[in-house]
Length: 322
Ligand code: HEM
Image (cartoon, rainbow, N blue to C red; front, side, top):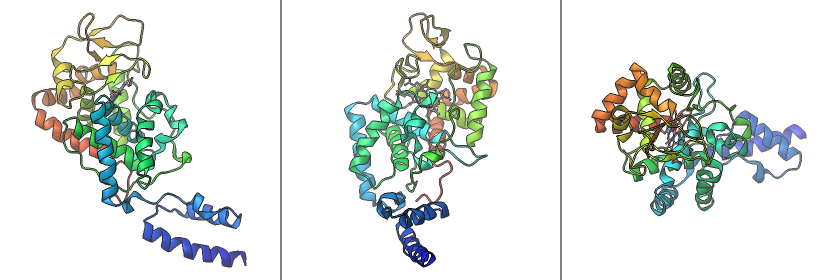
């Protein structure tokens, strides 16, 4: 009798999963089976439908919300890009886990990871509001969409974006330590920072060129003492996507800032711009420096390479996107 009802239930669930495009795994189906046989209602515990089933009008609606959010306060654009990057930058090509596919950065435990400081009270709730108006779109899709739309809205290249990421549960959160630190050696940029960047980004599947291209996003936004503890913007145009990160990195005499905060660089005493030790590592390491020079001289090349790498970042470990 028990097995007959289990079979019946599977027969009901599987076609459903096909027509809705669910990311159902054998484990999640069995969870539902156990839940139902335990008398728990099925609808509350079913996995979310895949975003692949979301009509394009919904996606367009969410895009408009994101554009309006940025237009109402352009400083929010860079923070949305940081959210998209941090939701994706946990990917490991070796263990094939982490990355943007599960939208797990919405959970408190992941937001408590050191690198995510500040996002719990900024971009995550901003996106939560948009999600409540477009609940069919997975958080995983929405966070990456936010990054792509922000890059474009702030004047950057078009970022190819596809939908279909399924939200995962808290058990998919990866351990803290997968995002890069701004300073890993003794205070200040040195070889260990360059090696750290390679360890982190090679794990995701990027090469030196991809690392430098992606870092160009630091033309945007700023460091907040209330979040990372660092302070200030990298460029004088923090809400315009351009190649100024590279022109400034290679042309300015960056000096250590003397202040009551973590070690960082400034553009001369009392300067208004900053660089992190991990930024300066890009001009101290000759293989990275080669790409800094390329992008400082050729803005179109930077736009093209950034678009390729950012789009790749948004799709790390994702299957069946459309
Ligand atoms: C290479 C290693 C990286 C390190 C060590 C690093 C570190 C940081 C730190 C410390 C902040 C300041 C956060 C705050 O105080 O609010 C920040 C902000 C930011 N990062 Fe990165 N980052 C890295 C790579 C990237 C990448 C790959 C992207 C995007 C492709 C990115 C995009 C941004 C943006 C847009 C902001 C500004 C956020 C805002 O204004 O709220 N970063 N990053």
